[in-house]
Length: 113
Length: 111
Image (cartoon, rainbow over the protein chains, first blue to last red):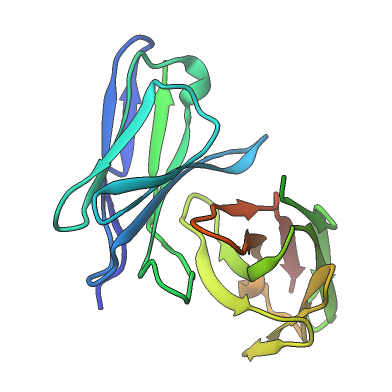
């Protein structure tokens, strides 16, 4: 089975721009979660989507948004980028059922200049 | 709010020197505790899921155990390729809950 894929792997943006990141989960998985990882804060939960519905959300400003498509692929968008948004953005998929185990993609490294 | 504390923050071992990493957690009803390994610049790699106190799981040189307040990741006779950051995470029971991660233990195994 193919693992979780994320595109692009690297991005460089400037302050004020917006960015869209993409995640394709493991085949058959319907839950996709997004995390922000920085050296100081560790992994911080952004949101989770299951069957195209957001069913959980972390404590991030409204500039961070996401969506999920009918094929379970997910995108997250960050508008009006700030320097502090520089981070590794990780996507994790699970079957959304009782096992709960999440499998992570390689991440997208976002640098905001 | 759920809390996960990992110790030590960093650990340096000689090859073959066994040790344990600690994960203390506070959660109102544990649904699952997860261990991951993360190499620099990469996504976390799943290792174990533990569900109830007393449960143990093993994989090669790694063994994870769980009590009602903490989990241990025991590393037996580590090799340099075991060098990585080890992350612990918890998920509570009830509805759709998020997973809360600790900040990790950075392990370095010296040849």
